[in-house]
Length: 433
Image (tube, rainbow, N blue to C red; front, side):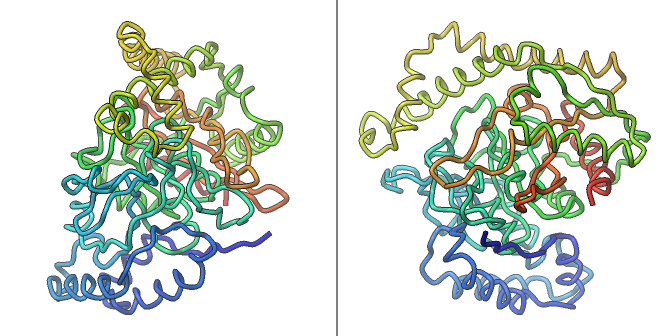
């Protein structure tokens, strides 16, 4: 087992940079040492010519714009990773594919612009599976490089876990933030559908595509939320105590033996910390939800690639091409029903939460630990229902296997309750320390 992890939480770094305890150029020197020593093995970053010359110029420009510590923006000097389906000025977007990048070009994502306006500097593009689906790139799990980091936001999760950057952008269409966060032992935030802008991001299935992000600390995740979310209402204290529903039944049966065992220990840790937890069967027909979401994703991926696939289909990986061909077989009526199922599922979950007076739902963030090898990114089935319903979900690192592989718990709140969810997660994370 080869571990390449490093402790690099966002919130303490922000304090140091904004108070001149550490300057952006000095921090980038440390980042360069870390990237050059670790990334040849982890391969989280998309290769870039003159990365360090560009970053030196960017860091110096940030310093020159904000000489007064009292006026420095919230992410002053922070290096961030950007998943390679986000357009960023000065960078090609390749999306892990062999399609010519000029075919994929577009204006910068507003999330990238928001990070830069908040003082962040782009460390670089991070590796994604092809078009954010299942065909993996070369990235390895920093906790054990013989295992997958998950996907599709493989490079972003691995970069944060390896200490290359304390914040990285990802996206989720099924489980591409919450699952790799669990596999890599970091915090993964999947906002309520529509709370974070998706312009400037290559679409997969626009009815469910959601911009998310990774940090090592919940406090850092809250800092990033204030930059990335539309209308973030920071400072709103969540009510206490928190009443929690732990998902049981057919949904939980999808997890492996190890996944269920660790989830029981996670629930036990919450109870030992004084939380009121009730086992609840929330998704009795989860197979129907899974099928509906998979067909929706196939149909909308085919639509998203209608201008590219006919000309460049021979350049697509088999898994992506098969998904698009499946999407061609989804009827208009089936797609409409699948889209309608999103709000119907959301309402059912809300009704069950209201009946039980639950504030939060907890569930396994993945079926088990990261699978061995990098030919697969693992199964997103534990994340799928919450994505389909558009509910905000945060993965917290919660335990490790005997082999040192991380296991995560995902926490889900009502639609639009993202501020309270992160506040609750900051408290809940202490139960797993």
